Length: 290
Image (tube, rainbow, N blue to C red):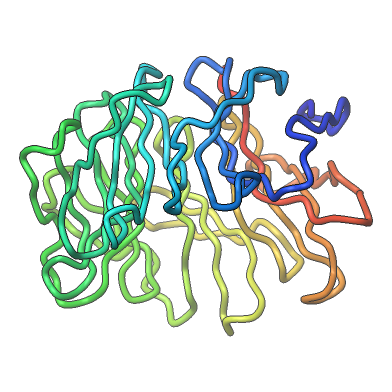
């Protein structure tokens, strides 16, 4: 759909469950996962929904994780080796390679902005830590090295910092693991850190009780924490490419209600509902790259 909610088009139009869309860096293709073949597979299609193709074509569970910044490679998670591993393949599905190759669980991979490194979390040291490796799987390093659980790394736009979760707070560290700082330091549960395109702010979801949740924003040093949404069932903040808007999902009607997609200005003003279907939920908006 367009940024104002107009022009909504069903791209996959399949009775199976299609989920987790990821735009290619040039905005011409979309990755997604679907169970239309009886198990979750990674598919790709053109931006208009044409040319849908199964890239993984494996009886295991495969989930897309992201495109390399130049669009030539795709990361995905799979349990085809008996545990979850991080694989990479060419954009056409060829050349599938296991990068992590460890009996522990490896998940949540994220490309560095320059495409040279991949951050991810792994339980290979007995607890979940954030690791980094070169794009070919070499040069593995434990960045967090802490007895707490560390997960869901997110690179800053310039690649100098990594945000991550620890003990229900949002932390940030330098890309080499130094300078780990607790940004939120709050008894609530803070999750889903999302960097603004200019790297000056981080939007996130905060839940004070585990049941209600709203979208907040803070400066990259953890200062000026501000609540943006006033309802209590909002999550999945996604910055527009120019940083002026934030799209998000909101649930109305309780746990049996419907999720809809909204957009607001980066300061929380001008909240606008974009979707309004009553027969299905609409979640996890992603902006098309400029």
